[in-house]
Amino acid sequence: MTGESCGLFEYGHRACGGCAAAMAARTILDAAGKDTIIVSATGCMEVFSTPYPDTAWKVPWIHSLFENNSAVASGIVASLKKQGRKEKVIALGGDGATFDIGILCLSGAFERGHDFVYICYDNEAYMNTGIQRSGATPYDASTTTSPAGKCSMGNRRPKKDLPMILAAHGAPYVATASVAYLPDLKKKVEKALATEGPCYLQVHAPCCTGWGFEGEKTMAIGKLAIETGLWVNYEMEDGKVTRVKKVVRKPVEVYLKEQRRFRHLFKPKPNETEIAKIQAVADRNAERFGIDIKLKK
Amino acid sequence: MALGLGCSAKPGRAKENRTGSWRTFRPEFLHEKCTKCGLCSLVCPEGCIGEDAEGQPVPDYDYCKGCGLCAEECPSQAIEMKKEEK
Ligand SMILES: Cc1ncc(C[n+]2csc(CCOP(=O)(O)OP(=O)(O)O)c2C)c(N)n1
Ligand code: SF4
Ligand code: SF4
Ligand code: SF4
Ligand SMILES: [Mg+2]
Image (cartoon, rainbow over all chains, first blue to last red; front, side):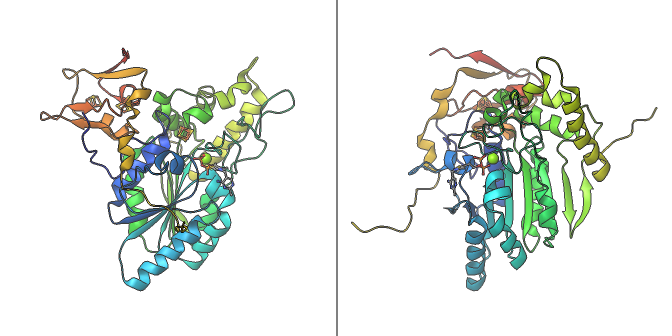
């Protein structure tokens, strides 16, 4: 059977089985519809969807460099405006493309206030080149450039708070989402597209290959990130947090011990000092966003 | 030879790449247990689960990579992963 897929993101792409970035791509196009122009930086999503001459995209799609993703999107938006055309523009980038290499052009585009949506699928490292740490890699995660070993517990720095940086540019809509909650992701894409001005969406995209878990667990791992408070799903309108997903919080160990990138924290026995530091990150998130559902005694 | 500015590709041409050959495990759909909730086709990263005339989910084995996400997420345990026999 080789039927036509009904979506705008065609099958036959080369993502790993169970890839969250592929789920995100499908959902984003589902929300955006056919009158959309996609600008895509280098990274897994670009590589697995467009090995020339193949492409999984059934909407206009252009490949930028890492550095100039938002600048290419800005140019397209300006040109569409001049021509009086109504297509929507979405710039897509991984966390490396967004948090690190493309942040200059991203900041410029938000400062100029172009009407577009920037979506970062955040798999928390440079996956396409073999799992190097980025500004989005969480504390203590082992990557090839922050390897855990005798002298190191993994990545030494906390995850950069990019949504707040973009909100500080005066962005009208900034939100976080997760592939573990696809209908919520879809709604946020729709809302961002309907909002005038530069909007930012950051989507948690667990990566089985880079984080070290079985592909069938992608959604389950994404849910655990939210249930432990290590990832918070929220919306910000005009700089104010207006909606937050609340949870009955679980201890961070239940999330950490499912992944190879945190395995060193449990060997030979649980490293309580380091795990407590990660728990403190979750506790701070919980306090800052008010995510805790208080159970009645 | 003139150098073109960039390259273009036919929309959706990736479909010529049959990723079903990657599969080690095959999802088998137990229609008697299925409630037609549609979750499997929503989560499939390939987008390769369609439906038959009765609204029952049907995977396209030409593209299914056998990742097992549909089986893991199905709320009715209506999908079983079986070792592929070639
Ligand atoms: C300027 C530049 N530096 C490095 C590379 C090599 N490169 C290609 S993909 C990639 C990783 C991208 O990481 P991220 O943006 O997080 O996306 P992911 O692969 O994790 O989805 C790198 C470093 C490049 N293409 N261009
Ligand atoms: S390495 Fe990770 S992000 Fe890249 S295709 Fe594989 S699962 Fe997806
Ligand atoms: S997730 Fe399970 S119950 Fe729901 S449609 Fe798919 S097979 Fe049926
Ligand atoms: S096993 Fe994976 S690729 Fe195959 S139908 Fe299920 S979710 Fe889709
Ligand atoms: Mg990445």
